[in-house]
Image (tube, rainbow, N blue to C red; front, side, top):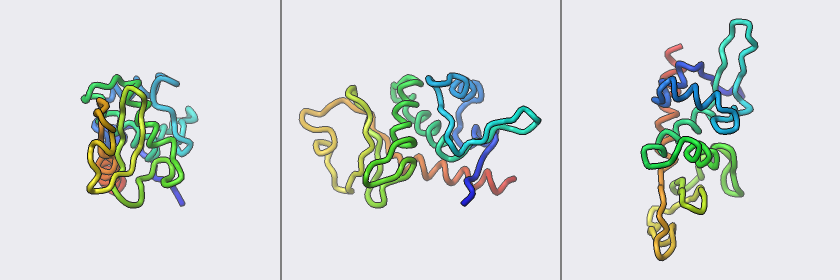
Length: 155
């Protein structure tokens, strides 16, 4: 199965990240966005670098975390927990099959959790509550997928 790839302009339109910021993230090496194995590098022969869904998703999640107080490095690291690592119940860069997939970032680190519709904050964060930033990854993925489909249709 072929993985859809977007050029830099499409990447920017899908994520809404400013070009200057995205270029900094891409140029930082280990401190920025690591290329997915599905990305296509330029050969220098006039072709363009192209980006796959995991890389685009990582940037989109990070862009949602930064306004909530995380630095770019923290946000990209937290997003990588979803895009780069799975567990026994979900593959890397995939949502849980049932329930809500959320990213929870605390002082202790980042976790990707599967929440039931009736889960309470004390079940998620413990008692007393641990300060946390929580985002619904499923909603971010839905937005990315919809925008990617529009972008791919406009080609």
